[in-house]
Image (cartoon, rainbow, N blue to C red):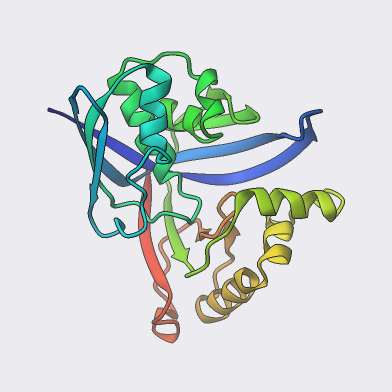
Length: 242
């Protein structure tokens, strides 16, 4: 049995630089790995099976739609895989992509750009640390590590990344005032997202940034002030990791 740590990723900034003829958006994003991580246990097997446990296991698919299963197909491998789910899913922290990247590392997969066909965050998760990510996510250029504390605010809102990109197109391609071009589109497509941001900012005095297409909001420090005013908001403290 092989055990692999699969760190969460955080998109600190995201600029959309163009749109390809096939509709995919070109980006320039700074991404970092966090010390929040899933744990993957994997064994060779004749057929692929997937089980999940942990605080965020609820709602994670265990069939062929899971990125882990799809990554094994890409690598031409089968395995028995167990995921201890410590990364909140559905919030843009790349948990599924991190899991797929962990399995591809186990399979000794080396073609980083090719993994973008499974998901745009997987190439970064294969490289990890801190990087400038361009193209549609397949070009990962490592950057010097910078230690940084962040506070993640996780609203109970599910955000569809394709829907956010469609809204960005419909809005005429707005620029994000806080370093993320997708933020105006995400708030327009999912108004509750903006209401949560405003509520947290009012309580804490912090300036929040949207992580990728959402739904996670974050700030560049560990925030403690005002949290007693928002007891229903899930708060996670994290630190960047190399």
